[in-house]
Image (cartoon, rainbow, N blue to C red; front, side, top):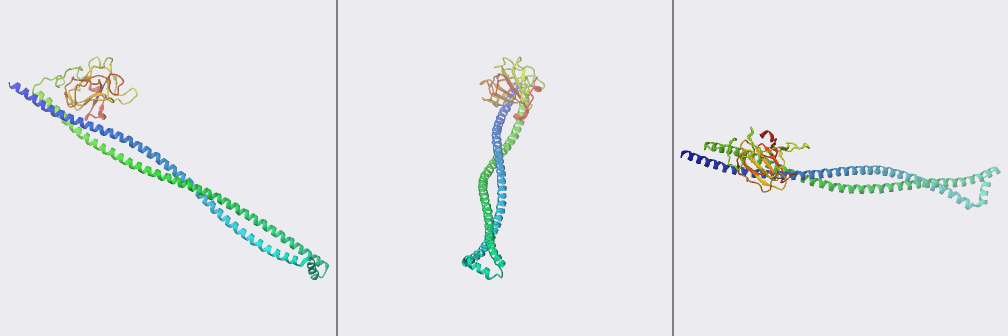
Length: 413
């Protein structure tokens, strides 16, 4: 009677511990799901951030190119200003020469006209009389006539020369003014293009400012989610410790109640004890004998990290999948992508195991269930991201996150 009472007491203790463990495991699974959701948001935000940064970089390059074009046009405008100033000085100098030539021409023209008027008014006779009256000899008379003729001809030549000089100065001034007009037009055109480039640059600067603000907001979101995941990680670690402690208490309670145990010391309440021999780590194989050949190692043939091993022997489709050690189911889901139908179990030794690509609808456990070593949890299939029937098997260290995957082979028999 006493033994029966102790056994009943042990069972009651074990049930209480298991209920607490299930509740903790469920909470831990919820935390992990929340962390996964956060991580998905972080990944999306990082992608958005990358796009924003790429767009910002591209826009900044456009601004730099605009700056270069504006600087080039401004340099050309400065050169035009220098040339225009030089032409203005030359035009001013030409105008002075033209004024001087005009004044000299007018002065000489006036003198010549006065002499011509005198000669025209006097006539040939009067002119001859003047020469005769002023001469003491025929030589003086001839000299006087010749001198008068030469003077008239010299006046005409001088005026022609002054007119030619004035025309040349006038033409040079006109050429300078035409050149200046062309430079003014070129400068106006370049100033117009520069103004347009400045407008485009301002628009690009506004765009960069907006992208910078978007970048800050996205980064703030990433930082916030990252901090949230750090807190979740800390909470998961704490829950993991609690799960491990409760599992130990369960084992102790079972031992105190003298409950029979299998070779690993775990409860043998499952529907199967498959998997064969037990390793020094306390694990059995997750698939039956005859299907335990590993077809894909920790790394793919491409060199990419697999983070697991695959059991894919011929005829493995539909074969049972066993829990390699007792523990608490923290995840049991059926996805159409990724792992497909999969299970994650937390074990008393602090390790986690993951079983993926099971047959659709073959799950035999739920989150929070306690499973014994060798208990069937699902069937081998090819759901999710799979090219054929096989069991994808992972071993993870605490707290059981994706980044904690290790080589499963050392833990297997």
